[in-house]
Image (tube, rainbow, N blue to C red):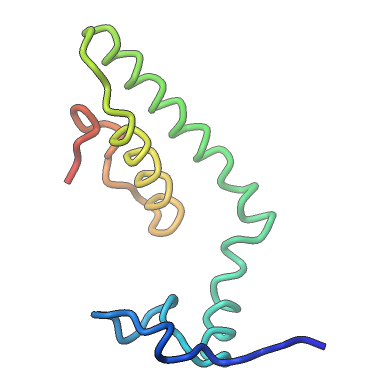
Length: 108
């Protein structure tokens, strides 16, 4: 037996957001959205982007190595944020914003 229920409006009210994947309160709506997104996160889909992850990891390592040669400090928060942005943007939209190539990883 599975338990399915709608989210309580009082507990899941997100100020400023009226719609979107994370604010569906009705079980049927959330299930419909989940079924649309699930193929993107299947084991095969994730295995298919392994090359992208390694490619971006190599870019990150190269950029860190280059910056290390200048003897300046490296803000790893921005470095890993850039890695994440480029990887997710490539995976979801087919292109990235070049965050890994931005000076000091500080892309808009």
